[in-house]
Length: 119
Image: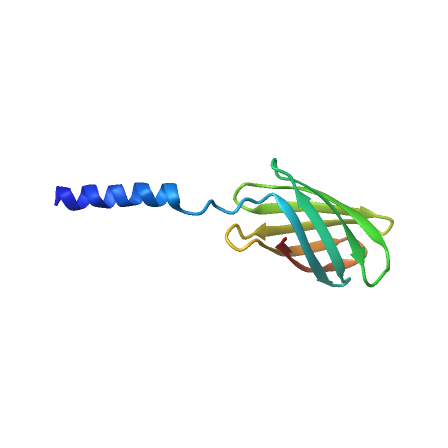
């Protein structure tokens, strides 16, 4: 029994050292949003989880700036600001797949959902 337990521990230690590194959240994300407005967005996450980017409204034809923060477990909160006002984006980054999804809300405009992918 001890021999099997030791073999299992040795195997686990080797797997931890040789397996592929976990997906990191930093990098570029591109996607779309829809609902009361629709359009596209781009966000860059730095190593500290700070988000910055821009979006383009398809309904109103205006651009906006995006800033925010992501946590190491994938929660993300961002704000969009431009001449149409402010919007809040709340969502989740899937650490394994690199997919980003959530909801948005903008006073006077409405709400909807967004989805993107790590590039």
